[in-house]
Amino acid sequence: MAPLAGPVVAAAVTLPTDSKPRILRGLTDSKLLSAEERERFHDIIRDIAHVGVGIASVDEIDEVNIYHANMRAMQRAFDALPERPGFALVDGRARPSVDCSVQMVVKGDRRSLSIAAASVIAKVTRDRLMHELADSFPDYGWHTNVGYGTDAHYLGLLRKGPTEHHRRSFAPLNTLFTPMATAWHRFRFVQIDVEIDPAGVELFFLRNDLHAVFDAEGRHVGIIKNQRGGWTFQAIGYDRDGRPQPGAGPCSRYHGVGLESPGREALIRRLSSEA
Image 1: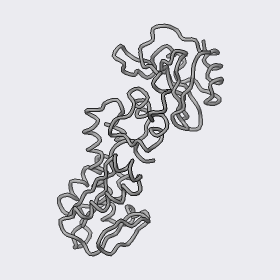
Image 2 (image 1 turned 45 degrees about the horizontal axis):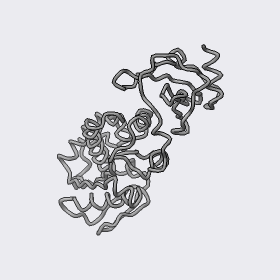
Image 3 (image 1 turned 135 degrees about the vertical axis):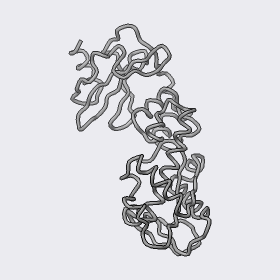
Image 4 (image 1 turned 120 degrees about the horizontal axis):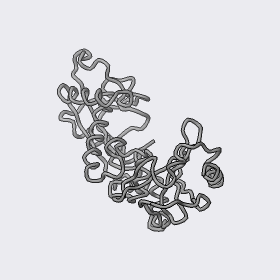
């Protein structure tokens, strides 16, 4: 799953030419490392290796698609190395346009130490960029999800709409938030101090496993979510400043109830039976 926001970041790393540095013991695919381990290895790699970083912007992603943006970032990372290598190992099957011999390595970040090092540099660099952006855009959960499509990110998009850092060519941004798509504009994210009629609830599809729930007036009251193969309703309320409060709101007593399916009628039956 690709992020919904933020640039593409690639890295190129030339490790010391002597034997495998003992200080890199345990280095592997960045996705298999904890955040603390990635940070530690990032600083070590920066100290002992030649590193180049390449970035392709959100505008480039939307203009040329994610594949070509990734190729641009990889080429820029190679060009940013302080010394040009005569040979490069590249993760995956796609060959970037670099002026040296190239060997493609499928799942290379688990088979090559230098590719693993590059994956750590790219991951930590991008995460730090997203953490910085999160300070200015706090409604999307970027401090923790770094732009990936978590529940918090999707609900932030519903509440606030997309930013200039979102990838507009990606779903759901290219369907829900285009100029022609106006349905989400009617939604409201406000404190509700009265009971709502369960028969008036409406569902709004976000992901295959996530649906937002609104009352008859378009006010957000919760989500339907699939967890470990089962559907549940999760209530959400809002304080007076419009901040979401999980488990609260007018449907708080239904929080956590199971559903036989994610359909509207199933939700209405369940909420009505719990009243």
